[in-house]
Length: 196
Image (tube, rainbow, N blue to C red):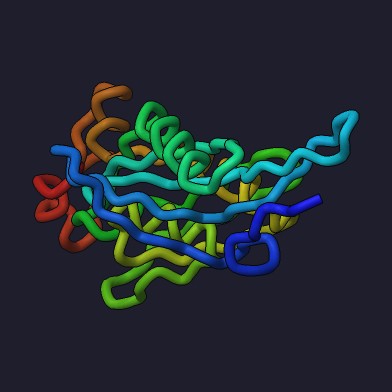
């Protein structure tokens, strides 16, 4: 029985691919992982490919999707379409980092995301790095605890990003001024106008 060729080797961990789409949104998609899966049927095994893709505009919007098909390009296309449908907007501080530290959990995986000073860069593992690069975050420190499964890591990262809030949104929700939320820190007045 002839087997279908594998893409690369191993289970696809750590392999990322960046492609610019021709769509008007200027979206960038990264292939986080691709895995060959088998379905056992009467005549033997039927192989397919499962892909996990992260899509973002590098300006605060990001989404992820999973797709499965008999061929690799079709699996990636399905995953990309699903990712575009599930995009979320994340408020960013000065357009480069998070406003505050946050944790996220999905299944057995949990992640800690911390805001970082300018010049820090993206300090994060493979699947999380793909999320931050497509999101447009320039400075962040992230740590994965528990499950190292790429799907769990990406979903836990999205759970954390959905908890992020800007000082402006918190102030409007609580009926206060942004300066009341930020306190009397130096540069708070300057930051008030730069909030997302």
